[in-house]
Image 1: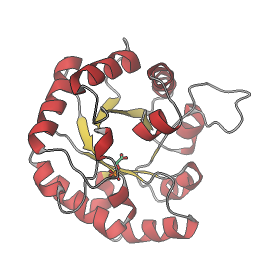
Image 2 (image 1 turned 30 degrees about the vertical axis):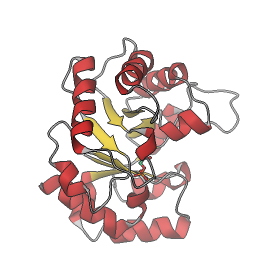
Image 3 (image 1 turned 120 degrees about the vertical axis):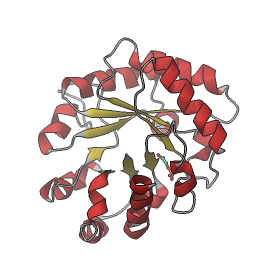
Image 4 (image 1 turned 90 degrees about the vertical axis):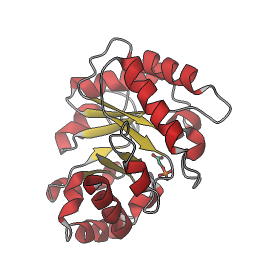
Length: 227
Ligand code: PGA
């Protein structure tokens, strides 16, 4: 499974060019694209699998600037990234708020990509266990995918060692007691995706920087699905 997190990148013209370009290669259907909210209809219009990068923890009402899970669902998105480290660190999102967002997403039948991961100075297993416990509590896990992203590897060009990624993803599956999909994210690109795809415990990738280049991302999808 491949997920593109465009973050706050690409303008309208670039998005339309991106869509045109990926549609020339059938591999594009093997990924989920998460653009800024305003571009969702373009992806829906072409039947491209699409998700969002965030939702509101609230159902509806007087929350200026927020976008709800039901609004996202009604426009045709099927996935939502929740708890990305940029939201945790820049926008001070807590595990409790993330839990509320996951609940809203589940109520609206969205599939959730829950991001977890430690900072460089933190103890990995302690942080992962705490994030999983506090974000998921006793929620059903069927519609949840975990994205393991060590914070120091995001957007830095520094990828975690393969053995460490394997251990971390194994730990997540073991902690949740089910063999759920676990993606790796953090500086995945066209040069390292082949080796990373060999890791048995990794079920796919959440790609930021490299995903905004359509030719590069298409190559990465092809590698991920064929290795
Ligand atoms: P990156 O971002 O691929 O640019 O490291 C990954 C992410 O933020 O999900």
